[in-house]
Image (cartoon, rainbow, N blue to C red; front, side, top):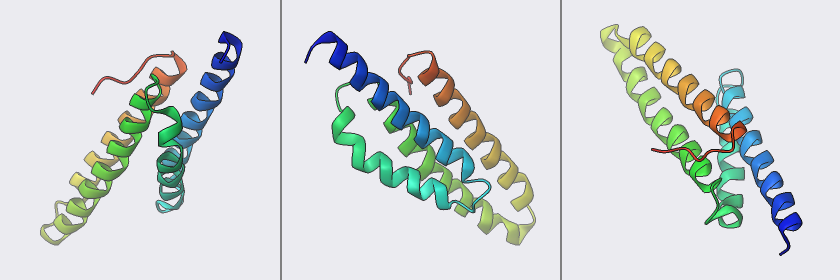
Length: 114
């Protein structure tokens, strides 16, 4: 590939990563439906971006989704002992932070460091 083709492919991969961040963020409004769609896109495109700086964003997105799902489940269980509102708020803040940090780093052209 020429440098111009590499640059174009890099831009396409960056746009896919941005789309996944947007779908993750919209998950708050759709009950998680768009977040599931984001993960489907992520898994489908993972091989295409392997070995690039954008791969770190795809892994960040996967970790955000799966750990977010785990923490949400734990927060749901804590509703029984009336701590659910607090743990639910913490999970929401954590998810917002992860999505925002990833999108900012993507926009700046930097990989996400775990």
